[in-house]
Every structure is written in structure tokens, then in C-alpha cells.
Amino acid sequence: MGKFEQKVALITGAGRGQGRSHAVEFAKEGASLVLCDLDGDLASPPYGMSRWSDLEETVALVEAAGGRAISAVADVRDTAALADLVDEGIDRFGQIDIAVANAGIAGISTVAEMSDRAWEEMIGVNLTGVFKTLRAVSPHMVERGYGRIVATASVVARQGSPNIAHYVAAKWGVVGLVKSLALEVADSGVTVNAVCPTSVDTPMIQNEAFHDLFLPGQDEYTLADVERAYTELNPIPIPWVQPEDISDAVLFLASDEARFITGEALPVALGWNARTAA
Amino acid sequence: MGRFEGRRVLITGGARGQGRNHAVRFAREGADVAVLDIASTRIETVPYDIATPDDLEETVGLIEAEGRRGLAVQADVRSATETERAVARVIERFETIDVLVVNAGICTFGPIESMDESLWQTMLDVNLTGAFNSVRPVVPGMLENGYGRVIATSSMAGRAGWENIGHYAASKWGLIGMVKSLALEVANRGVTANIVCPSSVNTPMMHNEASYRLFRPDLEDPTMEDALPAFQSVNVLPVPYAETDDISDSVLFLASDEAKFITGATLSPSTGVNARNV
Image 1 (cartoon, helix red, strand yellow):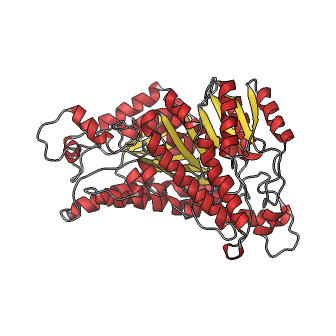
Image 2 (tube, rainbow over the protein chains, first blue to last red; image 1 turned 90 degrees about the horizontal axis):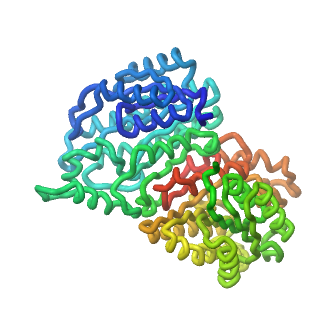
Image 3 (tube, one colour; image 1 turned 45 degrees about the vertical axis):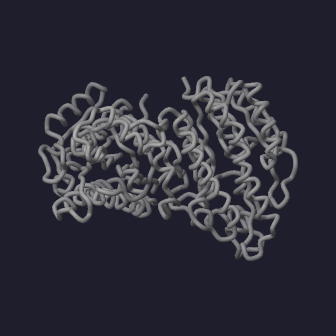
């Protein structure tokens, strides 16, 4: 008997990476899934976005795990697309119990050199997109008197970090948003939390631009060099965690074991967070 | 198959309250559990009865009722020597300690402006130095094994200020600083160190006249019924307090493989109080 039998989980950014892992892990525990992602690239991230075929692959993995899923192409900046997704999910499965606001992008630039477009796209997807996701699901949850919302922030949502100020600002914003919504819906049976990962082994960091950022001025390097550079960030001496490690925390926050945890930002960060206040 | 099959656990302050519940829950999931408690002398300045030897024995009985080995060790965590000796007895019997739950703590009340030195000092001695005294003799064995889980009980008063318990807040902030530092020191050797930060919990520390008075300073002889709405007014979720099982859920999660990459973190099963702070 899975922990999430009869539960329905909506996950944004489910085409690959962490979102795909969350979908599969929820499916293993009995949940039905409502999934979305992009199908095509954005202007500013230095790596490609998810494609329809990625989302199809996630659906196949969910079904292989014994779960059911519906999926749609939706940009989390698009209010109408999210409303449609929520409606379709409720129409198909009867309700939405869990929402994981996972969709996010990364980019690289100093503040001085940052374009308006890079800033706006980052804040649009990583912060406004989370807001729109939470806004789309929370009234339904409040009405039913039950809901578990988990947003993906970052370990840099608790500190500063050069070259990714727009990402840092968006992720601090996610924590503020999560804590505020937690207070607004506390009387309605809905909890709202965040996870704060360190580097995760996904396309967001496994690309040339990010590898170059970690190895500045080096024209040639090996994967071992990249691993060493990423490892330096983490007190537990490994370069990155796997998407499944974040799923463990997301599923915990969505479970009954966490019924009295809300407004929390839980770091899965190899101890990086031991250097921050939160 | 429990998550802690074959693990050896030591819990300080294990005679009753949260510590007892953690003990039973670990035993239920397959662990042998030693419980350490002062269990005999009154602690000066503490306005409620502390745990008795009978309480401690009862906890051992509850561990054994789960089919696991239980062990009671008596020690005042304020004494480094007593605590070291107690830890040595646990290691003698269990061979090793895989999980340490630093749970022993007291709560007393008074404004800083008129706080007696003994009220301050006893608080720091039990809640902070007592935690240090408990951690220091256990960690070397964990490092030798290349495996260990340390979980310390702080408080929402370890993340914010609170009238009339400034000494308690100082001890709990200090505890977080100590555990985050420990996490960094041992991160590369298989040991994680984390903190749970409860709000009010349904235990003897909560249910006593002094605590009722703290929450209802307007009444001369407040009863539990008088105090309940005041307890609840501090919380964000509409409950007066969490149950000990809720705190155990978080402690066991942090001790589990699902949290293997979480260290130096605070996790707040605090009914949402943390939504108002970091």
C-alpha cells in the first residue's frame, strides 16, 4: 500500500530532471499525476528546454510504475494554460491533492551585464511561474480542506551567489511566497513548503555554460574536473545529488508525517546550508 | 521491515515526553534503543517535576514491548564525566551508536531584566552544554564507523526571540550553531547532524502550572482549559500543540536514508510558526 494511494499530484516542469523523478516516485506510491512542461526553448537559458517527447517519456515511466497521468504543454507564466491544466486534472481524476511547483530555469550573468530579457524571463518562470501555479491550485485545495504544496527553491534562496543574481532573487522570492501562502491557508488544511536543493544532476547544470562557469578560464577540462569544481561547494564531498534525493524530501513534505510542517524550506544540500542562517 | 533494522540509537531525555516517543518509534522500526535521563534528582529552578527512575524503566519496557533491546542509563547531561560514563555503558552493551537524538532539555520562565543567575546558568548547562556533553563522546565512534546520524531538538525559540524565555531562546539558538558547525566538521566522514525545531508539544514540559501562567499571565490560577487557546494563538495551524508522534516523524525522517544528503539543516514540525521567521 503506497503512501499516496487515491491522491492526485500536479507537477510542473515534469518533462525531465527533478520533475520527472517526482512524478515517478509519486506514482510508485500510488498517486495519479497531472503533468506539464514546455515544448521548445526560451530565449535566455544557455541550454535547451524540455520537449513534448520528454514529457511523453515521463508519462510512460509513470505508467510503468503503475500510475496514471495526464500531461499538457504549459508555460508556467501562462495563467490560462495553468487553469486549463488544473481543470483537466480535476475533470479526469476528481481532485488535486498535491502540487509541486518545480518548473525552473537557470542562467548566468553578472548584475552589471544582465539583459532585461534574462532578468524578466528568470523572474517570470522561477518566481511568477510558482506564484501562478500556487494561485491556480490553492482555491481548489482550500475549498476541499486539504492540500500539500511543495515549491522548489534552492540552497541559494538562503544566501547570495555571484553570476546568478536573477536566479537567487527568484528563489529567495519563492521562499517568501511559500511562507506567506502557508500563513494564508493554514486554517484550511493546506500546507505549503519549499525544498532547497544544492546542485542536482540534471540538464540545468550539466551543460557547457555551467561547466564553464565552474571552471573559469580553462579551455579544456574533463568531467572529473567538473565534478571536483562542483564538489567544492558541498561539505558532504560529492558534486551533486540525484533527482531522486530531492523526491525523497518532496514526498516527505507531502506525506502525513509532515502534517504539522508548513512554511518550511527544507534544504537537501549536502550541508551547504550549514553555512547559512536558515 | 523497518527503516532502522539493526541500528543502535541513543536518546537523551528519553524517560518520557518526546524522548520516550522517539525511543518507541525507533524500536518499532527495528532499532535497539538506549535512553539516557537524569531520572532521580530534582533540577533546581525547574518548576515542574522531572522524570523519575520509574519513568525511565517504563520507557525501556515500551522499547522491549516492540521486540527490541532497551537500555536505561542514568546521567545528568550537565556533567561531562557522568555523560561520558553513560555513553560508554551504551557502547559496551550495544557495541556502537548509529543514531544520537539530543533531546534532553528543560524550560523555565522569567524576564531577562530580573533573571536570577541560577535560572540562566542551569538553562545553558542543561540545554546547551548538556547537548555538547552528549555529542562529544558519541561522535568519535560514528566517525570511526563512517556512519552516524545526530539529531538535536531545538525549538521555534531557536529561530526567534520570545518574551520571558530569553535564556531558553539563547540555549536553543546556541544549539543550532553548535549542530551546524558539527555538521561541517563531520560532513566528509559519513555523519550528518540536523536539528528539529518544534513549537509547543503535548508533553509534561507544556502541561504544568508555570507554563500555563506564561501563556495566561492575566489569570492567577490558569488551568489547561484556560491555556489551550493561548497555546493555539502562538501557532499558525489551528491546533494548540503538536503531538510527540509529529516530532518523531521528523526525527525519524532525518535519521533515515531518505535524508542522507540533508545535514546542518533545521526542520520545523512547528505547526507553521516558522512561516513567520527564517
